[in-house]
Image (cartoon, rainbow, N blue to C red; front, top):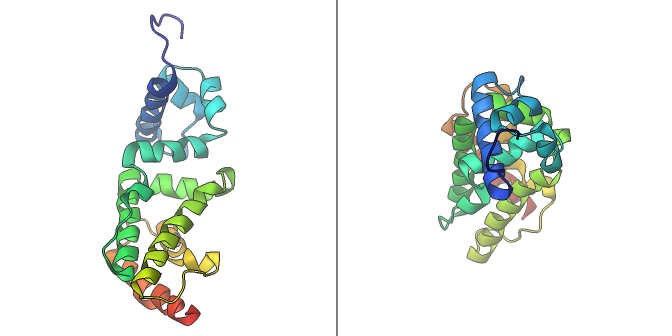
Length: 188
């Protein structure tokens, strides 16, 4: 930028941009977030953002782990499938609180603008939990249809969209006990 004596590059520039995303979200919300606004706040050009991220949904998605960490890095291993799945859903709710329901709803509304690999992350996380459960003898197989594997995450996303408040823990227990575990038993 003109007037800057040092030009930021690489990780330093990216960190400034991702911090600017959160500052901009706090000030204007997801609906009014623009690439131009983030670029101005990060003191860079919007072309710098577009070289890394195709749109605001991709930019915000990239900023999420910068703020909350990667969910895959927080994978629980309680020794029981039910507790593991509940722990993952609880982590998702914590992230919803940290990120804010406005951002979650905005990202879900713009899901077609996101790289499809984004939604594969939850499949991989839940599949890992299922594979552990197979090794422990809790379920006979983890070789299940993709939609079956991801049911808890999909139901939680639905709850996040329709509710103004963070999803209650009782709802998470219902998702696991009343839907997911019986579904897995039916596929065993």
